[in-house]
Amino acid sequence: MMKKRAFLILCSILLLAAHTGFAQEQGARKKLEHNIRLGTGVHFETGSNAKSFHNVGSGFQLSYGMDVPLSDKWSLMPGVGFRGCFSTQSFLFKGGDFDGMAYADVSLSLRYHKPASNVIFGLAPVVSYMVVPDTYYVDADPADLLNGKETFNRADFGIRPSMTFRHGRHFQWGMEAHIGVLNAMRQYPEYNRTGVISVHHVMLFCGWHF
Image (tube, rainbow, N blue to C red; front, side):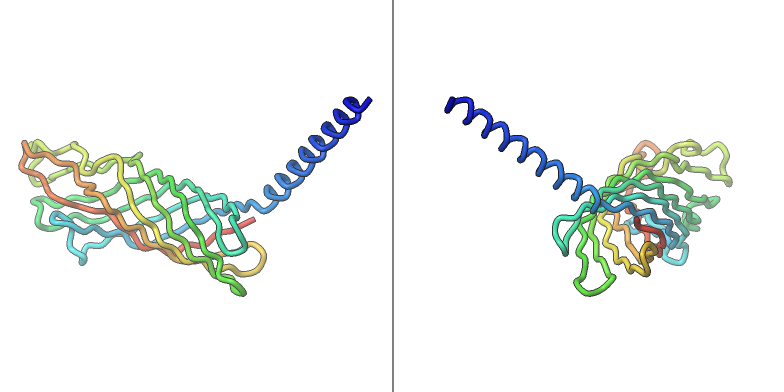
């Protein structure tokens, strides 16, 4: 009899714990927040083979992130995005060229929600893969052996600080910078084309959270 009561009590405790855990999980899910952003801004390069700052280009970005709260002030937001970069080639290369490429980005942003305000500060590592590669085109020399070869490495890594302002229930806008920390330039020592180029951008964005 005592064993049966103990068994029933144990089952009740387990059911209560399972119910409580499920309720907490549902509550946590309600706090998850979707973020959709569209941004545009300037694209530029640094390094020994970078273009002049007088030849900065343009860029755009479409991204999605899911904000996961850690506390009242902190959250993590994993995200994915599509980023396009365009710029004119430096006059130092014969014939000139045009850079046009697009990246798929995967990020994980640590976000600080400033108390008693609608401001959020974020910092994210970003792993990028070039889905639309840029290639060399030397129109002054159609027979140049570099023509058609990819200009940049497919994989890249960067750090992305951001600041977001929220208005109303769903609208948000802000600014971010992408700081490329790797050498993105594909090396061709056989064609005497080596060096260092890191790819960056600064963008304004707007979007919705819900």
